[in-house]
Image 1 (cartoon, rainbow, N blue to C red):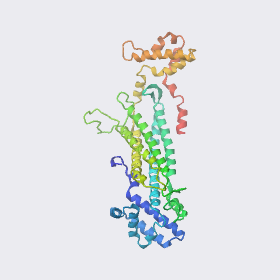
Image 2: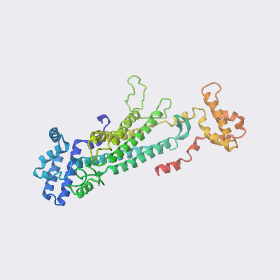
Image 3: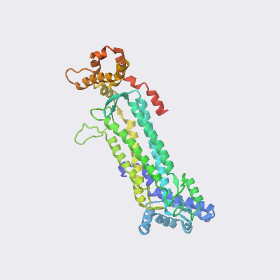
Image 4: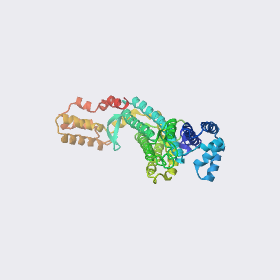
Length: 443
């Protein structure tokens, strides 16, 4: 992910320094477990830990360059690291990586990094949820028009709109918690997963110390269905981000202008048109969502490896693991900030709702006529006729509001009182169940 869309908290997780720290921790823990079993001297395990910890604490660009130099010759990243570590540890390094294969280190490290990334994403989701909850309560009773097919439907609450997005992100948090649990596994089982040269107790020890669980059955690698589920979850979260971003983009359109992104002092919208205030944040979020979802299919295709393993998944994961989590981290924080500062125009919401002469109340009028004894088919015909009369003459000579057309219609005026029509045209009726809905969403 390019620096423009990266935050240091997440990029640090995928840095070479963090990766090598985790690699060493896996190797050192394995040595400690094997020392407890008598497979290697306790003093050797202690030396590996002490000298390795010191080397990792002092890890610098020079060490990184040295590992790269070794890899240029060996063409093997894990061997390059182990060779560098041996230079730091000395003779006791002969016990490092005993009975293990490279994937034991690589896959367990990836699990640690993905759980670290998931924990940061969960913090991001909490900020999004807090922003949505705050704004949802702020505008719980702010009446606005609901739209279906982008056409005015019936009144709703702007807070209720946001409550719906809150509920979606709450579900996404649960999905990510499950995805984190699924990926938090350790595999130290040897060349084809049979523990031929290492005791399963070593794996269990390392897993416990790293906050993971032992993989129930591995081949040479952790099965990639786990990783696929993780990236599918990231894709679903990205779609939730886009759904909210698209809503903001529509509401900010000049002819709607019910809400808009905060426009900072000194901000410019266009190099050619000084009046422009564009929804650049939500448009950016739409683009990032597309990018994050693009990682889902490669993750799914990584599941089908040859026999006990091949490395067709490796190049994919070296790209999608950092890029997917870095991109989503950035997008969630940007979304939270956008919603915290979103500028909302209740008066414009009312103006838009009333701009069609009251036809948005046609559904309630239909029910009123049915209660008055008119068949539903006839009631629909009457209401639609008067609504279309209003709609087609908007802004033209002879225009009458929907209410005026109804009152002039003999099939209505003789059956329904003015008081009943008053209630039918009151937007507040659409909010009478909002407390019940909020209790479901927010508890």
